[in-house]
Image (cartoon, rainbow, N blue to C red; front, side, top):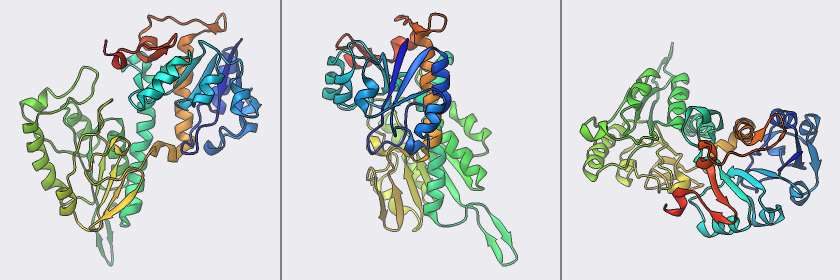
Length: 377
């Protein structure tokens, strides 16, 4: 029988790696699921709820990990958790592979088989396992909700006997999963929405959601997307032209949501100090790239600051603020991934090391870091 361990996350992480629904399905796959008592409380998954679906509730992380074949986490396990694992045990988590390289090498050296869910290939078969998309979707939604709250004015146009309330203008910078959900949410809330991205394929997506597309559409713009669907770094000349266009557009916006990130790189700077100073008092910027330095020059990661009457929010782990939904979706991502690793007939681990999903997410094995994005091979 496969034993799966789930432990509580750190104080800054309210999400958890299983839900009552996925516990039930993991047990049906033939696994024993051991969950540290209280691990799901911040996602409103009580011990009783998890136990009712077949989980064994144990006291402390060590008791959960003892003898486990697989450890499911949201964040990278602690050194103590890794030390408690048996050699070769599988860890599936958001490892943050580009952060804290010494810590990653130490984790690899413990002998665990580490899978980084952020490296999930962008292929059709892996869509149900794409943790970046599931979490970014919620972050994009919450960015608009929080931005509207900080704005302190109505978003939709309201025509009343006492006069007309104008619709708020919301500008979304970066049209990935988070950006598209931000556009959709802002439109549902009645705002006038515009968006920008350097990838030409996003123009049609933006317009299909009823928003205006804003970009310098030159020859470089037409080639500005990688095979994996990410934005390419743009030339200084293009960046200058785009910055001028954006600077003129930002002056008249009420809320700006920035979502631009390229994996493994610092967040691109999209909003300068001068742009912030040009904005109207009462305007709001919500910077979803704060964890990687921010898209706005004046963002302070983890804080909300006031600069000349403009509120700049740099939230960390925005998906975690809607932990019930975030944990439910993340747990389903992990379940779909484990189904690739488990033989349903034999109810045992059966890993095909040549599978694209396995190769794409495998970070460390047999004490060594093996992922080509981390080894330079």
